Image 1 (cartoon, rainbow, N blue to C red):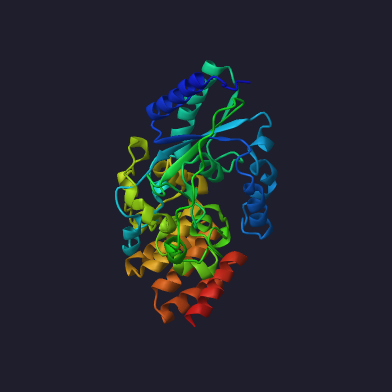
Image 2 (cartoon, rainbow, N blue to C red):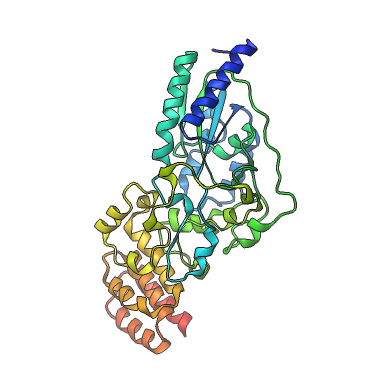
Length: 384
């Protein structure tokens, strides 16, 4: 294993890594030891034991490997953390005021970042392996790796009170990737917490997803509800969702450190024009084929058409727009019970009380799916 005891050799290798990272489009790179984040295991265990992971069973199943890079790969000695900026052009919070528009999280308005980053990480890793003779493994979010604690240990930023990474240079808008290696590299100094007394990220959360600073209950998080949650959106969160149909940027966007953030330089991470401020109406018309075509190459595609339309229908119900009534009515005949149930709730918000009661009575006489019947009955109780 390379211990790089020669300071000159170590310095040259680090210069090499910095150059390759910049050439590949990464804004920042830092190194930490594989054992550098010892509190990760305890925090993860607490998170899972309290059930705050919701239905993300994979978090519990991979907790042991996730808690320590050496549990994932015992031979790992160093972790090279890289960050790519995906800063938006404008304030993501502004779109929340346009109720006829559907809001997609900044990170999902362009190509899937996994596709963009992983190939570039592999290129750097292969060159590093060829130069040092050491083994390498590359990870981008899809493996049981705790990127944020490792990034903090490496000095790329710190985990803020919203549990996301914050950088003094790039604010909240960083994608992370890691290269594990058997090489012993000189680690960088970890970053310290610069949140101070600020509570902006905690106070803005529309669903109160933070039980305390530095703690997240995913079951209350709009990102979890719109992306990971497979069933109907719990009623208590639907109004708070507003027009957010995929993810939520509120706690990121409000962070004061974003005053230092810059727009993404990587063209593949710049927002697609058709995903900047899409209309709710346009999405309600999507069948499965249209959904797949529109979101080809996008992370949105992974939730599937039915969950996506479920989210859009919640936004439609919150829009207050009678112009969406007919499209919502059409979806009462959808093949998906998830969609039909969400359509019933949307119509309960868009129609007058008497008109909705007549519609619900007719629907309940023919609907046999328990999930959908429950939606109609609950909506009737709310309007009553």
